[in-house]
Amino acid sequence: MSFKFNTNIIYPKDPTASAERINQYKDYYKIKHDICKEVNPKTIAEIGVRAGYSSWTFMQACPSAKLYCIDANNGTHGGGGGEDGRYKAWAEKILSNYNFEYIDCDTQKVQFLSLKNIDFFHVDGDHTVGGVMHDLDLAINCISKNGVILIDDIEYIQDVKFGVKSWLKKNKFKHKYIKSLRGECLIYNERLF
Image 1 (cartoon, rainbow, N blue to C red):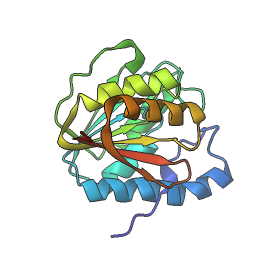
Image 2: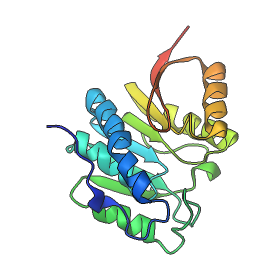
Image 3: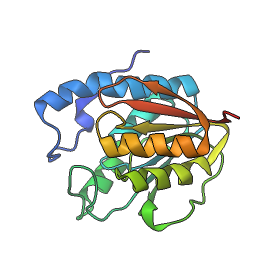
Image 4: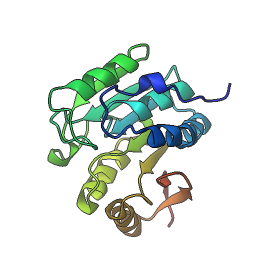
């Protein structure tokens, strides 16, 4: 079955969801869907859930997976907002048919996450150089032996690109670039040497 982005999952008051961007979502989320479907994870985690669009997409690819949604419900979400809980509530609404757990956590304030054996970990949280590197450190310690990390925005935000490149230079994991609207990097739990 081919993936089709459902515009009904977009939070009605999302200030970033212009008509142009919604049109771009079709291809953008299809790429994420296809990557996740190919990995076929039993467990999925995401840092930076916001209103749940990516999480929903991953669950379209693997509806029987267990999903962990990690975000700080404090108004610092991408695109602003969320301080009143509206993004968290929306994410919970569009994910309500799936096996998921919402973890209210500012990942920049913790040194580890108590998740293990995550097969697919999406990182889309703090977009500073240090923040990206920190979230990648958290994610790599949670993934399974054959797990992967997918990181978003590496062509869209220069700090993310620099953070990913710096982390990979330091840690030497196998990875590949995937072209998309914002650029994706898939990191494998496999050292280069």
